[in-house]
Length: 494
Image 1 (cartoon, rainbow, N blue to C red):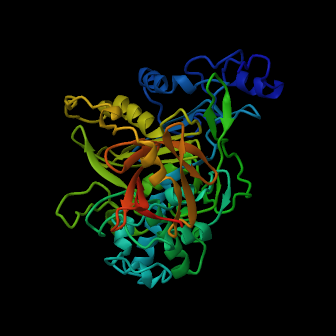
Image 2: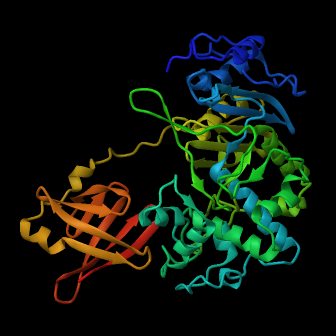
Image 3: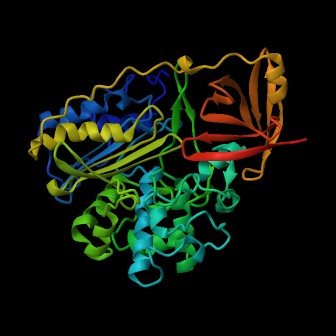
């Protein structure tokens, strides 16, 4: 998209006053923030280091592209804050210090904090069974506790995958009730609780529901009163109403093949697993709480970062809403997020009292990757790092076609073809023979070609399907698994 003649006069004046070129794309390293880091009272970085950091975001430093906002923190202060690209392509508004982003799963640490605060007040125990607060959940093969939800070890199937298979699209309006219904229909778990780690948005959505039922407040109000206001995070809120207007919120855009951008916004209203809307400056205030412990005290800060083990004895690197590990010999605490075309990362190096925040509104950007690239440049200036480990040598990966099974005969296709129903998804799917192969037809989802992968196993984009037989050998149904959802059964309809 050409931007030369499309920049409004008022915006051109503002950009010119900030030293920004308005012809075509932004020139490299042009500052477009309304508030510079110096104006915010931060200590400026060395110019060479600034240029090195700015180079990470060069692909987004344009007037015709969405982009990212960056914050670099040291000793509780923003030492560098800058926007790259546009908050609104429609209105030609650049990303500035005040721009609000949806931070996706980076929100989970606020839900975990809410649960721990309630536990500190004696309102619940982290080792309570989940059904104590959400009795409509079925009883599973083993007890599921709040701790399991916090650490992604519950085995509860991910509601986002379930709802997509039910036919929901991201642009549809869907509520907490829709997600809860999808979860409570499930009669089995992905695995025995505590035995595996498998990231599940269902766990944190249910934690948000527990906060609401125990506190008698909506999660957005509990978090506002107990976290955001005490830390003076005045530009932060949890969005549970898709119609609510949020000042200075960035748009969300995906690249179009051949050039240009398309809007990618979600109207889902679930909270707990995501939905926090915030700025770099407010996240810096939250980051500071891990040193000041103003909210929750040291007990909360330590609890959020405590990493346990699986029942097998295997170690984990997920604590409570936070990933905890080491990078080149230094401790690293982080959590990324992604929703619609938004991505986010809050990356902390606690022993160096340094953090990197990256918030993006471009579907072509990975905030976690960009934040780590900034850390690659910044951390060596303030920390003694171990040499980078050599890249792990792995055997070449076989092409998926190497595992392909034999084409199905006409008789095989006829045996498998039919309609199938899943009570756990409350949907009917069709397996249909087309052009000598088999296709999967779902409600409101594109038709998918099923590729044979051995006896009775098929692959389609995003899922594996396994045919089941009754005692007489006739096809009785199939199960599907994909990522965070395993073993959903479909029975053949007469």
